[in-house]
Amino acid sequence: MYRPAAFQEDNVDKLIAFMKANSFATLVSILDGVPYASHVPLVIAMAGDTVKLIGHLAKQNPQSQALDTELLAIFTGAHAYISPTLYEKHESVPTWNYIAVHAYGIPKVIILNESPESMNQMINEMIDTYEVDYKSHWHSLSDEFREGMMNGIVGFEITVTRLEGKYKLSQNRSQVEQYNVSSTLLQSSDPAAHAVGVQIKQNLEANEY
Image (tube, rainbow, N blue to C red):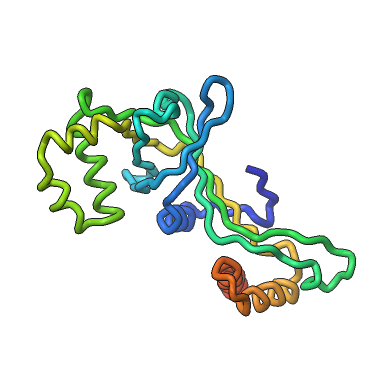
């Protein structure tokens, strides 16, 4: 990911918090020599100092057959157009503010008939993350139904080997311009633009101390 110095964010705790808050990710791999992407919910977990991404793909998804090489998981949040009229210098250009985190790693494949314990653990972690109250319902289903569902997916656990964060929040502009951008976005009726305004404001306040 292109990360000019002003926008680089390498605080792992901050990146993990963002990933957890925006865990519906884009999973990218190379399939037959071309990029292939799926959009999936992921569980972000820690094993000591190691970040793990846990999830699954439908077995019929061609990408489930491309889990033997490095994968890229892209996490994105709110984004907003930034008008050049908010800058002090007349000769300025439009841009876009956003936050993105890229996580790279090698997956470990989880298949029911090869590792039923790992498959059950993956399912339970997904349920605990996204709807803990569903767990009793899931376990009340017949073994035949649950096995059929689990046989239809390929689970994975990605050990993250590289984590890149980009917080593009007008940090390359003057403080006055950053306040102009933030206050304008905070007045927007667009929830995404308002959220970016909040992020810029928080970033400004954090750098005041």
